[in-house]
Length: 361
Image (spheres, rainbow, N blue to C red):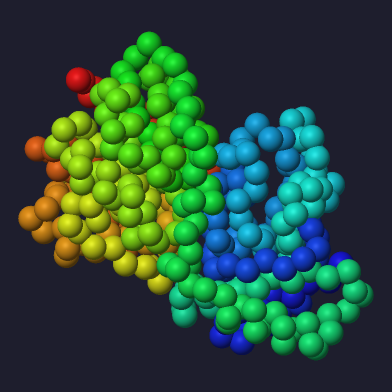
C-alpha cells in the first residue's frame, strides 16, 4: 500500500502504507522513547493525535499485549521511519502491522521522521492528515484532498476527547488499604496497577462524576488521572475539584494536574510542541535533585498564574515549565510527568504513590 502524510503548512510526504487502509486526522506529535510502542499506542492521552516516533526502527519485538495501557489503540495514526515486520521476542504474539490493521489504524513508514521532528520543533505542532490507499501510486488529487482535510479539521482544543476515553460507568477494585477515588480522564492501566499493588481500595469514576458520588464512596484521597486534549475542556472535573478542595487530599497526574490548577484559579496554555518521551529531566526545587521522567502532554500550567495560589515545587530542567506544585493547607499535590512510566523510567514512582499511602481520613 501507498501512503501520504500532509501537514497544514503544505508539507506532503509519501511513504509505505501499512496497518489499516483509510484516513487519520489529528495533530502530528513526536515522542522520543527507544522502546515502549505498545504502551504509547494504547495510551489514552494520545487521543486526537497522529503519533510519530523519533527512534528509527519500530516493531522489532512485536506485540505481546502485556503492556497495553488501555483496551485498544488510542492514537489516530502512526508514523515511523522503518517498520519491522519480522519481530523476534519470546512474548510476541503478533506483528505491529497486524495489530494496527486489526484495530483499524492507518500507519506510514519510509518517511524522514528526523525532518518532520525538526519542522515540528521549529514551527510548532501542526494538524495533519494520514492517508493510506491500496493504489500502487498516490494520485495528485489524493494529495490535494489530504492537505485540504489536514487544514479543515478542528483544533484539538475544540474537541471533547476526554469523553472518548473515560470509562462509561464507575467500578471498584477492592483492597484492604486506604480508599482512593480516581476520576478517569483517560487513566492508564499502570496508574491503576500501582494503586492495586499497594492494596488501595480503588473507586474509579467517569469524567462526568458528581461530587455526591465521590463523597458517598468515603475516600481518603482523590486522584485525577492523565488524559487527552485541552484541560479547559474538563469543566465537570474542575467543578468537582472546586467543591472538594480542602475537604480531602487531592492528587493529580499530567492532565489531572492541569485541571486542578485551573480549578484553583491558575491558567494553562498550549506548548509549542509538547513534552513526549521517556527522558524528560525534572528538577526538584527543594532538594536540587534531578529526576528523569516519562511525559506525554501538550499543555502546561502558566507559572506566573500560580503566584499566591500554589507552591511550585518542580520544574522541567530543559525549559523551566511547571512539573509539580503543592497546596499544603488543602492537601493538594500534583505532578505533570507520569510517575507510573509505561513507557519510561521509574525514578518517581515510589515517591508519588508512597505519598498517597500516607493520607488518612
